Length: 543
Picture 1 (cartoon, rainbow, N blue to C red):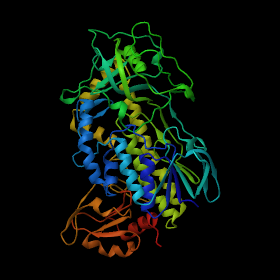
Picture 2 (picture 1 turned 180 degrees about the horizontal axis):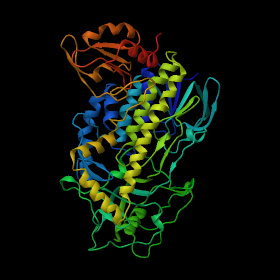
Picture 3 (picture 1 turned 135 degrees about the vertical axis):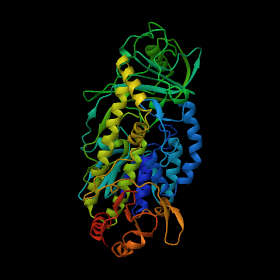
Picture 4 (picture 1 turned 90 degrees about the vertical axis):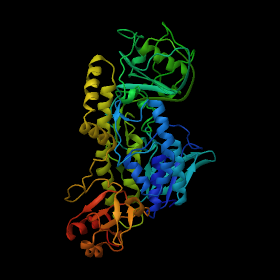
């Protein structure tokens, strides 16, 4: 065997998964099609749960160093530091469970160093061409500059994005909904006047800092340009503090460009390439076969701005172009035998709310320690079945709320009215907290395979701890090893006998006893010895 786990894709999810497998005692090799790390800033941050997960692995200081710059960029581009639901920027961050503003290339560099420091191998320039599942292993065949290569391992995980080759080579169904909206955007330089950003009758013009883009109904490239209504100004939704609702749909979540899908067929858009300014009479942009689609051009952005605002603009330059839709799809299962999926390979959705990267990193945290335990013989293979059971509902929840956001992002006076009401509701503190928790996932609870009530099944926050010597610490400081952790009060010290050689044990005096899995999930809390034994046997079988 070449490894215990072969991971396809060296994005953030594949890199974190490799690190978790290594930390748990397995051997991981990552195969990446690209010969160099991508500089594409597809995502600009991670949520509270992913932030806490990386702090538990000792990466917190690096996140803290990146956050101020990322936060400045966010405020510059959005006109506010507040989070948003459907571009209504009113969500105050939870002061106790905060995310991190970090650009995806910076996060990938951090996770590459982390994975390699733990012994993971990252092999670039490997393009997957075939998979050969066997009774006890999976063989992957890749094409490289030096010819064909074959690698074999007991398990293989596709972390290769929305257009996953692994998913397409394996009988995973990928049901979902076709796109309602399409967004094209990028860092743009204009000559001459630029229309006001905001909502127009047929779409939204996004403009903040150097970033500009257009969101319109999928297929709107075939609709003739329309002028703004009323006094010629767009319908805008002001953000708290006076900033304009602008660019959230174009950079959050790490979502790669996705084709527009109708009835299962790819019909993406072809950019105009003959000019970079558009006025009246410019022909509509036609659809074209998927293989002919290239990056969004300055001309295509100018044409889209004209379609939505009626204004003639000149886009001199367009960097880091984005072209994506809000199609929402999810694999029917995340495991077929020895082949598994994680991240965008398992689920795709609109980037609204910046949830995709967070969702994928939590896939990796959930799966990594389980794969390591199974491959080293410390747990039965059935442990891997809990991966789909736990993570599939988490993605379903994200797809659900991003579809709701798409409905609120669609053009039209009826949606404008609904947005006004939702905006007013978000002024109510309890509603504001509801939307923040909805996007962060902090209230999402796993259904564990034994009777339990909250907080069991939730991701533990980064608790303040006081041990039996009065020493203060944070929970994340005790989870760097990637092992389970049993917190025991003086009254519960007898329970330590059940956990010896299974998990680490920490005496505490300021909170109740609890058992934490390596991914930070509370697996048991303040129960009796019988319920603790059941939890330990489920997640950490006796040697």
